[in-house]
Length: 320
Ligand code: AKB
Image (cartoon, rainbow, N blue to C red; front, side, top):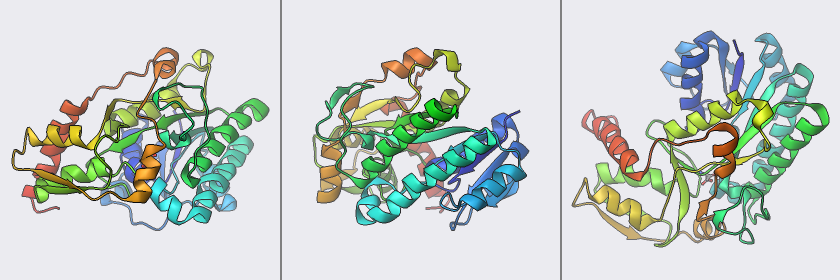
């Protein structure tokens, strides 16, 4: 049985991924790595919990040795908009943190999952049907950390044989833990505002198309790539994966089908808009489909029904 460490297990993806991994591999085999944010009761009580700051290599190595970890999911990162406000911190967590993870993985023979992003592309990338292998010259610190992470991960595989694998996540939409400081966060916030206030102010302009994915598919991608037959992988770091592409008008109209009096207005955030304009409209994820059977389950219609049900229930119970 795998022995897994999730670094960043209270974040948007980490909080759900840790619980999913515990379901699959057993509670005791999945260590939740936390830093400052308090974990939920469910996370804290269902399995081992350790303080792990990826920028502290001694602490990281100690936890890996203590639990005989063989697989590390490194989810520690600052999202795109916040990384523009704090570029030094974004580099430290995103690159120095990953370097430590790779070094500890090399010494302890661990596999490593690295989440890259649509942010690894830039305005000189072909933005429609963005190929798996293409120009990557991002203009944001977030993108710089992601491209560096992809290269470092490939290097550790080729040079040291560390089993590194990863995907380029699009915007992830979920209903448990809110994202913080991302450019695609609007596609989560719109559901909460539709349920709570029937009104949403969108920070991205009409016509801004971006790749998106519902959390159950994101968890599946992270787990399936780590379970994939290595002999079939021509790429490793990192695979384009997408489930849908829409602009603010399309998601607004989809929600309006269920909440007819929902209204949306625009107040464009220039930082987020310029980031979004440099990202793909839609990626080509053929390599992931061919090399490890990537096949997302949720489209916009299905995701919207599920999001509105879950958030609606929370609202009725006074939990929002
Ligand atoms: C962000 O918007 O920063 C992230 C991402 C697409 O990587 N959600």
